[in-house]
Amino acid sequence: MALAAAGGGCGSDVAYPPGWEAGSGGGGGKDGGARPDGGARDGAAGDGSVDAAADWVPPTDCPLGPGDESTELRCTGLYADWDTKTLAPGVRPYDPGLHLWSDGAVKTRWIYLPPGTQIDTSNMDEWSFPYGTKLWKEFVVGGVRLETRMLWKRPADQIGGWYLTTYRWSPDGARADELLTGELDADGNGYEIPSQSLCAQCHGGRRDQVMGFEAVSLSSPAAGGLTMTALVAGGLLTAPPASPLTIPGDGATSAALGYLHANCGIACHNPGAGAASTTGFFMRLDVATLGSVQSTGAWRTGMNAASYFTLPGVGQTKIFVPCSPDASVAYYRMSVRDGVDGVFVGSQMPPIATHQIDPTGLAIVAAWLTDQPQCATAAP
Image (cartoon, rainbow, N blue to C red; front, side, top):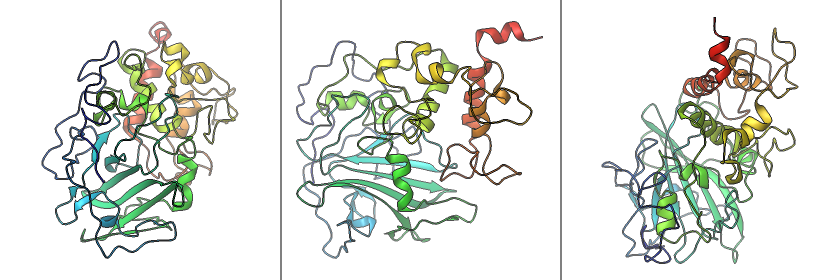
């Protein structure tokens, strides 16, 4: 398994489209620190380049599961050396810049693209990945590795199609075995490893299953490793964007739109395959909507938009209410968890695999709502 490093890819002499410069859209990457796997906490994912001179050779004692998947993480192609956690050739770290809340877990991400392939970006909102693509995401909670999830687009001449699974790390960190049934309390404090059967509820919101490795996130200023800039420079996209993709608005607005995109829009609240596609409330930042704040889905379909959800003490409820987070249905549902303090089941958002509210996310959305121009005149 080998892949040319960023800057090479399918051709190292790739001209930047107008408006692109080396280091724009999240830069070519960030210092990955001392970890041999290129990993660091969110926002510092290494430079996305690796020595790809040699192919990865899997261990000879790798058991396989019914989906032809390796049932041990050490055999999936992530690591060339299991003991040192040195990355296999062609595996690149990345950080999408816009992060999905995972109950406080620190996450590290990697991707492998087969040699000589490109990502089909003819639809910039819905990328299509070549057969053989693998992505991994490691979850560390309280300083302890708990799980590493894997997405694998199996070769067409084998079973074909995506295989999604997770590997549960042993308490001593010596091994990580496939876990299909999930675990409700993996750390003793309520962190949930979701079962394989739940994967499709989120990943099914993408036409080709992959959530965080997408155009808007990889173009964000906080992205690292294999960013949009590195993908363009490496010739790894069939149709690079003509100019950098930028989330509109001032600091408070762009932060909120980016947060809602990553946590709500990519998987569910989008007009494509998302589970909430029939609600008419969309928060995914599609490329065509980046021209202004008012053209984004969150603004067009959410701001002052009526909601069917009932809030205590609120008459006609709305999804987002300028100047009033507490009267905003979306903010309320972010701020509660089902079954806690009498909250009825079906209230929380996101609806699965989270049992803690995200205080930072709440603050970001509240800052956006209270930063609207009319709020200054409404203040006493």
